[in-house]
Image (cartoon, rainbow, N blue to C red):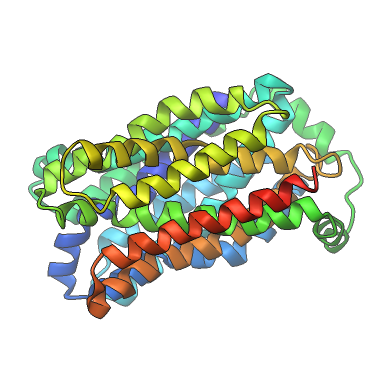
Length: 389
């Protein structure tokens, strides 16, 4: 089950990161502005906001097997539509389709982990499946311009078609793995429970102070991660790097994040969790400052710190959410729906804000300072959360 979830998260990361290395050829062929591209990059989080809560309820009601298979199909469909887009509006709608499949994966994965793992193993398992997203992202960032695009004759559309095929294949593999008799038995046991009205579930969850604080925190985490992840190759190219080199440098945070995603959640036992989150938020703030530098040791350090921060900020916040006694495995889907519905507000605003700031003539410098301010707000929310532990 963990392996199947990992495959789906690989496709998630691959599809999310696939657009960033292709920004320049897409801008050139479709004739769109940086602001328009910012809105396109933020299209799927916009849909995600509305879809996350219904997707969470769907997962709690019907279980992960079919729900996550549907997610893979939607992710593949998004890739196919992106490759066929002829206008900015068509590309926006194609990216938006991912917002229907994405929440099923990001909510379904912790749901599966909460059902099959407990204690320290749960944190370890969450860290492991997140590496799937990291490896998917690093594959897109490091190999798109240097390998996949040249192999496909420089056709950015062909790259998106290829990645869509990978997503569909992984979806079929998940369906096969999740059809194991033990998985079907777990699914039958969940289906036998009498469901509560969904409105009551959401209402009771939102009454919990810790839930509300974690929802606010998720907005800031996703603003930082989505904004920086989507624009990082262009930020690095603005520092004088060519497209292929910028792709390799942009993959550094993801590579560091792969190691951090395995180690940090396992170390983050309940007594240490808030302290580790504090260090992660400080690392994110320092990274946004060091990215002002030209290529060299300082910039590389910033990319390493970004990788450390982004590897586990979301994972630890989500782990804290599902381990709230009133949430647990039973309502992990609904709580995850609330979490990601709130988080993707930041996911939309992050890349959009950076694109708008760039087009107003400020470049990337004020956008990076804004990310530093977001990290400062996360520290304030963390202090507030500590009072409710």
